[in-house]
Amino acid sequence: MLGFITRPPRQLLSLLCTGNRLPRISVLCTQPRPRAMEVSSSTSWELPLVAVCQVTSTPNKQENFKTCAELVLEAARLGACLAFLPEAFDFIARNPAETLQLSEPLDGDLLGRYSQLARECGIWLSLGGFHERGQDWEQTQKIYNCHVLLNNKGLVVATYRKTHLCDVEIPGQGPMRESNSTMPGTILEPPISTPAGKVGLAICYDMRFPELSLKLAQAGAEILTYPSAFGSVTGPAHWEVLLRARAIESQCYVIAAAQCGRHHETRTSYGHSMVVDPWGTVVASCSEGPGLCLARIDLNFLQQIRQHLPVFQHRRPDLYGNLGQPLS
Ligand SMILES: O=C(O)CNC(=O)[C@H](CS)NC(=O)CCC(=O)C(=O)O
Image 1 (tube, helix red, strand yellow):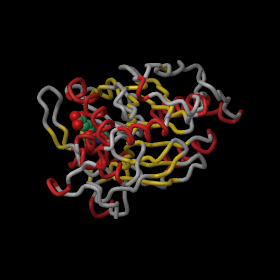
Image 2: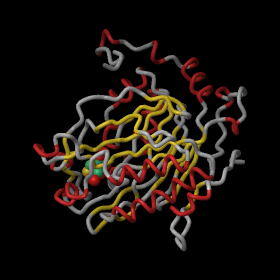
Image 3: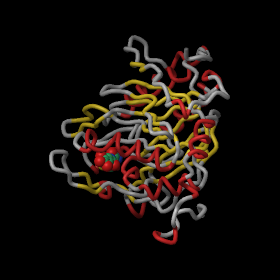
Image 4: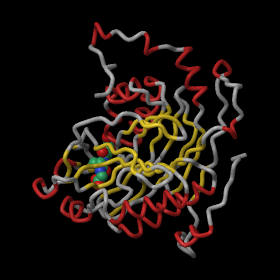
């Protein structure tokens, strides 16, 4: 059913922690598509397979790496070409001071280990939301929330620094003041070609700004990514609706790897990582706990939807401005 099941090279087994429970794997969603949208040109096993990893990061960076590495190994073994990790895959700290203390530069030890993991597994990695010490760290004493894309040689092919910071107070969820520790990014990253399609990079709270997803779609994105640590109050109300809306209006696949469960005494996340196809169907999802879900990316299907429903040709920039300028 999954096709192309491969085994990890022998040296990878050293990365697996012995005696640990295996991650939970959710099966591929087999929901049928509406008839009018059926594609007959490719059989599913020829299509690229992506994996979405769901974890509960804690302040313990070593443990978090071990958990993520296990899931990535499993994703590679199942034949995925690209694996997605959530925002704050590196750690979730108890307070802003600890966040700053645990942060690292892009050329630090932790990303070095992920680079080795990508290389040894031969898999692309979307590392959504690395707590990055930039060049300006000495002056600002603040970090960036950085989405890093590694290719299967372990090289950094793109980075995107979160542009919309989450400074909100939702009753029942505890205040979030991301700007206490984090600087906003100032530019968008043009979509990047990967074995699964052209990927547009975003992070979590960015999903509330459809302007960004339209801009990325018009710059050529076929897959939008929203690695997240969504709150437990906004989660049930907004998570799936926002992700499906971004997929439908941008006519892109939407891939959202999520944090789940209890990170420390005062913080929990909603989970429910998912892949949404450009028709708005949730084609794979995790539930509350840590684990993995898999989906195939069908760009013929995406092209058919864009042909049948040409919303990008029906825009009225004369009424509400042009969101379609090419990326600078
Ligand atoms: O804190 C870190 O270490 C990493 N950053 C995050 O987890 C960020 C900022 S607190 N979380 C969100 O953006 C949640 C958005 C959300 O929940 C919503 O839009 O409803």
